[in-house]
Image (cartoon, one colour):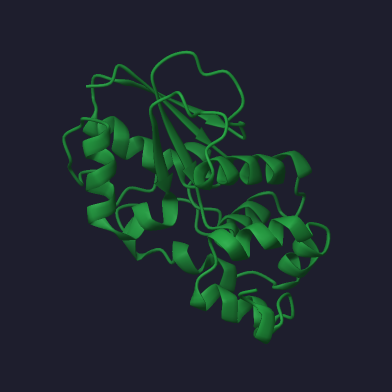
Length: 205
């Protein structure tokens, strides 16, 4: 059993919920979240859980939670963590467990694998919880408590004004390139084409 787990995350990546499951699996371990952190920061002890979330879903939740008052520092934190997630640079000498929130949310086998890497004991006792810390969901607060798996967290990008993505990528072309190369799937590609962020014939390079 690990005796110390550091979760490196950006705000609104579902980290409160993930941390609650990890604490359930590893009850004798201290679990600490470093929110809006950077992988190049110093984390001197324990195992590192590096957590990210699909950019479109994350930005929908983040933008909603801050009522449009976004911060370039928070966006940069998401990008730095995501880059480290796919191309390890700073944490190559540490034990790092990578958690993609979207997959963790929908796939039991994925969760079980994370639990095994943490030497924990898997359970789903907290799976349906919407944790009050952080205000719960950006969209429904804690109203879906005990029904968490019914929340459309993988479709959040369809629940906001698409103009927020047009504005995000207009000033962050490298961020768009990173997303299309590492995270984009068929559905999110169609979405980006439909709002004019990508051209269909060049969406996949």
